[in-house]
Image 1 (tube, helix red, strand yellow):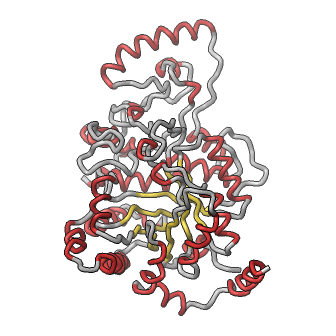
Image 2: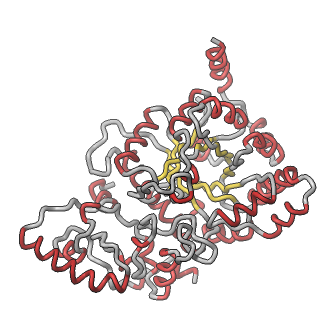
Image 3: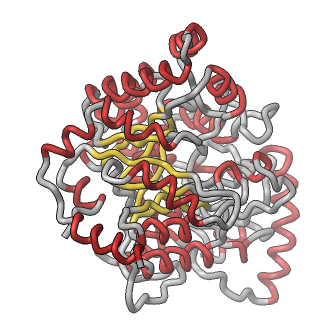
Length: 321
Length: 150
């Protein structure tokens, strides 16, 4: 059997997950095409759920496409669009489709997207959603009714170490652990100092021993993208050093890759981290290069090859038909 | 693990049918509760008051109506991502809770809101044992973690 993301994290491996944004159409091939950049590189592929409140191919549908491709998806599920009935039903549905990794999020507010006039649901918040998912794996709905065949879920949550107040950010992580989260993916790190400070507090509380923390890394193409994020994405801090480096760079794309690789290398020195969550927004094709340069591929090659290959061969044969 | 007990921690007990007297009392109490809570706390009548756990800042003022802490969108100046001119409710809650030495209560996982209790009197709901009573007095040994960080 191949190692799942859960196995890898539980066995203490340093993992790499990557984020894939589904298309704003019903073109499933776009997901297939983008996912090729992650093959044999990412241990899990997050599929965003109507990110920034813009309608897209649903996370579960795109994840199913990845499963068909022999990849391992992580479904992102937000409380913005669903009430407790839909959330629980989606958790059952994904498990039935053979997708077991879920990232529970509150979701961006609807006014940021292309349907600002929509009604935001927010029936549950992310902490409660994590707790609800945990409860379901134990065989109970929120109503207290029993589930005959409970879903198998590997439950994750998000953390933003950069938004104030810093102490509450650690507390919220503790709360998510208490609720039943098994892994955490953080907001993109553009401010290593602040991240290290957050991690120090996390270690002081001993939280890194209870949960796998995956630090977010986002490669950027231009200084404009950085400035946009600093201005328009609340709760994001970007160190001045990175901005000035991108400004001065003659080849901003090269510099972007360099910064991402350096960030990963510095993050790996921080104690208590168990992986990197790569967010190559609209730039999926850069993933192999970043993985290569930051030393992820070497590790993969040195570790014994999984039995994935025969399956893959069979899969490509099927596709040939 | 006692699963039954866990449910109580996560979901509010079912709304029970009130007697006629209780229904009338509920309306009267809601009137007085509003007089007191709306000007003081900008109460949103959720009927499941957790003011005492959040440093006496109404968490339901949050546009996402979060009950378990701030979302990832709090701006660097402590303002809300949705309404940049307003302060983040949870940012205020944290500061006030810290001033009042009540941060230990922020560790609680607040229950999933029972919408059947919306626009009912929280005081009566405590009285009729539909929701948990507020926590006013905290034991000193409860106060851990964040205080340690101060």
